[in-house]
Length: 101
Image (cartoon, rainbow, N blue to C red; front, side, top):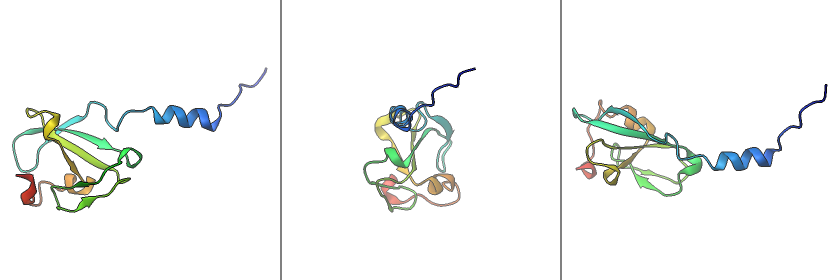
């Protein structure tokens, strides 16, 4: 029985680059300190090309850092915020910095 030809690494890599950013549609989670529902997406480090300021700690998220993008479900994507993953997970145990409001 003949063996299958293995895929080249270049073919696998080009297929991987065509994937969308993290969670395409996002998931819903409760928001930071509110009763609102937020839509949350993960951004892998390979797709993070700009720096952002995290509203949870007010520090910069440098390019290449995996992080979370969240926005209120009723506001739409125009009001999205980029969070460090740890800051998003701890959003209910700390206060939000002034830049959020």
